[in-house]
Amino acid sequence: MHDSQLLLEALRRGSAEAFQQVYFAEKNRLFGMLLRLSGDAHVAADLFQNVWLKLARHAARLHDDTNLRAWLHTVARREYLSYRRAQVVDLSRFLAWGRHVETTARSFAATSETDALEAALEAVSERDREVLLLVGVAELSSAQAAEALGISDATFRQRLARARQRLAAEIERAHTCPQPRAIARKARS
Image 1: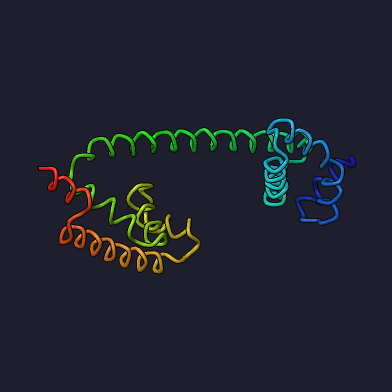
Image 2: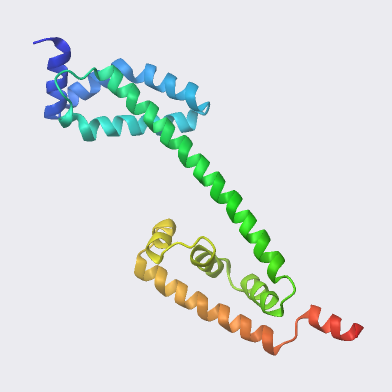
């Protein structure tokens, strides 16, 4: 058996020594490539870690004829491409969200209901505003929003229910107590 085949066999068996041997032999090349592709050492480090995690997860499935160096660089390249696609998606969502907010603001600018809602959102705590916006603007499910906040789904649903109650109370308060703009408009009439 050839040395590379022995190394592959050891990787498939889960040998830590084989993994270390491959890591020390390939780490500089892989990191250098990722650094050149991304232009950012932090991004390169994250992608670099992902490559080694994939090797650890998929080593058992490597074939006898696998060129390990090529496989690692293919994984590294794919990690970089996934990162770039995610950046494009995030940027497009950000830009679309900005257009949505701008359109929404223009279409509701004249209504007192919107003024009341905006005032109510400003009046609730930042914690309440966060959960309301995750569901209302970002359109995340409660499970997705809970994951984003690092809390359980049940905790998120409780927090959301309380935030909605406080928002409703603030909106009610806005309807019963005239807003300064409304008072100023009446004074000018």
